[in-house]
Amino acid sequence: MTRLPTRLATCLVGLAVAGCATRSVDVRPQPVDPADFAAWDCVRLADESDAVQQRAADVAYAVDDIAGRNIVALGVGVSIFWPALFALRPNGHEAGELAQLQGRYEAMKTAAHRQGCAHTDELPPERLAALPIASGDRLVYEERTSARGASGEWALQVMSLRRDVFEFRVSQTGPSRPWRQDPLGNVVAAPAGELAWQRLFRRDIALGDVLAGELRISGDPYARALVRGQVVATGRQTIAGRAFDVAVVELFGDAQNGEFSSRLEGAIVVDRSSGLLVRLDLRSATPGFRLERRLVRVQPATP
Image (cartoon, rainbow, N blue to C red; front, side, top):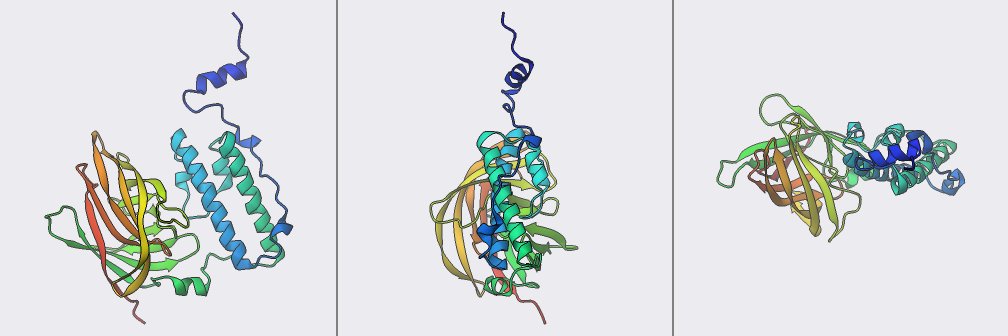
């Protein structure tokens, strides 16, 4: 009987679990000439850097989800830690794309340094002015957990709006609690017990786009729903005196809480310019995954 080489045998044994992955030390950025970005201004360089990092995070999350190591989930906002992405040991197409993305990112960083661009997490004034929300605003939602149940109030106070993360405070009853999401609308940190949506939205979603992500009850490792969605409507809508550019996403999937699982369906409506939740309607027999929430008023920041 022919004996397989040790490395090949190891790969065959591990194939059923994760395949023969490239070692992280074997993945190197694909060189890109910083001169390609010499004509770009600082704002454009910063915007494209954010887009590159977001795409890298999307690729890495897909690898991480298969591997089940939750390495990338430790990141916050758009900014990413490149060594952690390669620690996932991506293989094939994913490794190549991450190498290309890091090469592009490093080249733009060099171009920004040559132009004397100041590193800042602040949004440009014109970008802030275009958002339907402002720092200090209090967003009040009507909320209920069953169709016939009494409605309650759930509110978000806008604390800061930065390039990589928008920070809020949940003020329902008792002390306020931090809520953080990226500018696309994906929640990156939520108070314990709150339902949060992760890795669901991406840049420039349009009518007909198919999305995928997950819903989690923060702090509960056993409460999770894998969902898919489709953008079924887009357009301008005035709500609570503010103009929003909304995307309506129909959701469906399976929700699990411990040993209990059931079908989940519903819809989520977000503002495409800020990722702000406008409406959420979830239906499921799984505890924690039935919720109706809609924006009813905006209280402007007091001078």
